[in-house]
Length: 385
Ligand SMILES: Cc1ncc(COP(=O)(O)O)c(C=O)c1O
Image (cartoon, rainbow, N blue to C red; front, top):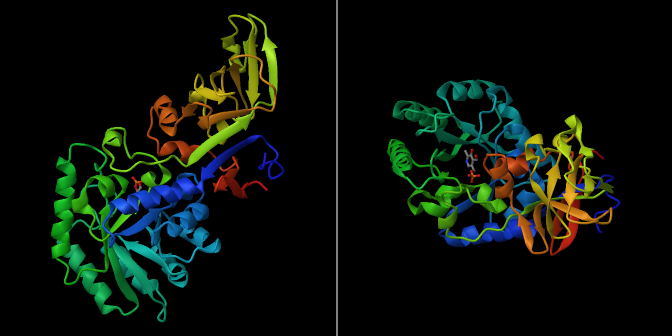
């Protein structure tokens, strides 16, 4: 296998960059041509790898990136990404000069924040800003027209500041009932009318709204989950107008295969007892990799067959019941396709009673990421070495 020699433990994640590009293109095709695509690559691109995803998205038609914190934006700059980057979360006003130096766009979410940032900003520096309106998410953002007006005035009067954008974020865009969504959209439109002049970039839509609500696109959309090939919710999954392909898969290899006799036990607590003679394989992946203990009982694919995890998941290893004797060294697919079978991220999310967003995010940085393009490994990122 191509990946050998780059890391020394037989567990890795694969990120299919072609699928990320195909998803970006499919979403772009669904949008009017003049709507900008802001690729949301926060949280290490939802666990997929920040710079690799950013590059793929930019190549496929994204024109801007968005992250949660300044550290994430700086990490992208360090990796040579020169595209515009918007920090969606609250940055410290004291750090405004670093953002200015690196050409990072910050979010203005409070008048006091802006006043403090202006005090701190060097005389000869300049910075681009997006104003965040809180229309009902209750997280960060400006809540009144008066505050918005004061902020617009402050920005206009200070030549170091450029008002590049304004945005809001929906709380329920991934639900079929659009009552609350419409209320938020209407509040955002009202707030826009109080501005003397609209900035060049106006945006409100996450993946769900970008795909389901043509009336909320303005001139840019912020797309995260759909770019990774995942539906924003199970409720709207059947209604999505584009076909998405999951880009993230997770693999390991059987490092030890043995026969257990009826009555023999497996793992901590000795809670699993073989009801008959069985073949058991050990995988070098455990809860420290994000393959958490609640995944006990989840199936993995070995030789194209579903094989359940038996006994408690350990920190670095877990055991699976094999369908028959399988050679040590065989690949076990924990997420992804093998033969006719697929284990989707949604299947894992269901097992964990959570949302698909969480699954690639929790696969820890200890798991090396292999990047594939045109069916070949083009890059490997092992955070340990
Ligand atoms: C402010 C903001 N915009 C856009 C997104 C992207 O959302 P999604 O991944 O649902 O497309 C997020 C993600 O949580 C966000 O917090």
